[in-house]
Length: 478
Image (cartoon, rainbow, N blue to C red; front, side, top):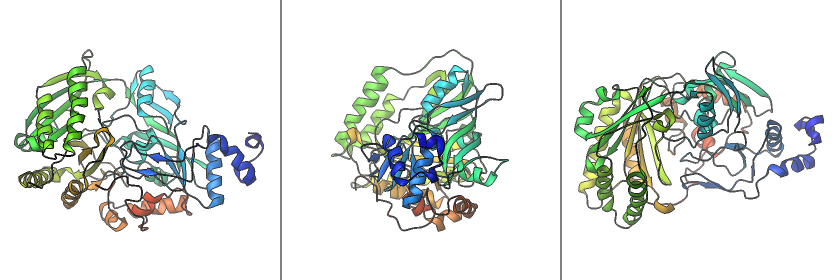
């Protein structure tokens, strides 16, 4: 590592550059996402341990005319993290660098997972303000895709970012915030990794808190009639809709000082709710009509009202169960009731058709407050997020394309914006109509990365309109 002490990456001969990168080059150059729906075989996968090694990777890519895609744990159900060129895994960029208890912020490396961040924040009696349904992802991953939790008065998680340190395509380190390089900052906090490599994130946090969650079930008609009332009835509200059973499971969570009282048990939630359900889903691959029965079975498992109190992130998180195909779009709140009703009518018609779709359950419904992040699906609007899923029991593929296509055609009519981490079909002209600052975003990435060092196939396709197939990395054709 003597070159680290005496030379910049530009000064290192190519032969020595290869030697320095060899210890952090993984022996197997293949990658698939958590949902087992996308796969790629990059030219090389690097796993750097420090910032200098990141500089070396970018230097090699510049010399060879290759792109670099940063990837965390691969939880995105799309090819956002995939590439046929160089991949940089952020697995070892997982440290908490600074904690300021008085000012309620921390600085963490971009590769830290939320699970690890929760644990380390807990030591200092701190917590994230809002969290999504899982905590497996990296902090940089949720920031660059404007990942959300739920709560109509709570913004996407990117709204809690105070500042970022980036490694740009030219090898320079820069800090950006709303006051310093503001355009770069706004572009990066939902930037899909296209502006640079996120080295560290300054994140607003708050004193640790517990949530009291009440869950109850009601009919879809009651749910849609009381929609506004229910959405504003608690700080964090979310719903799980079971169309075949015409039932909605409602979750209302508020901050609480009550003692911990978690809900759940091994027999009911793990054995029956997880293992037995997965077996049923596997059998339903061959007998699709059983998916309707599985919906009724699941509703029976959760029909009783429950009340639980636990640490905030444990209430925010839910079990995502099995590998899956999934998609989610953000609908203007004012369109939500109409959109959900149209989805219901469509699925009812499908259920009446002997050859109609028999989808998996549930449909997840969540909310977020407006923000001013250029590519955030919540830009300028209160948002209702509607997500659907097709599970892959024991890793086996299932039909999903008809279901997803019908869903997308409906949410698109209601001015829907797709979740950036999830697969979608929109091209630049369509995105430009949905995002007023789309061209501002392109302007920024063209300025900081004129040669496209950070533009993988996903960025080329959706941001620049280059004809790269949306199925180039897709596993399975059902």
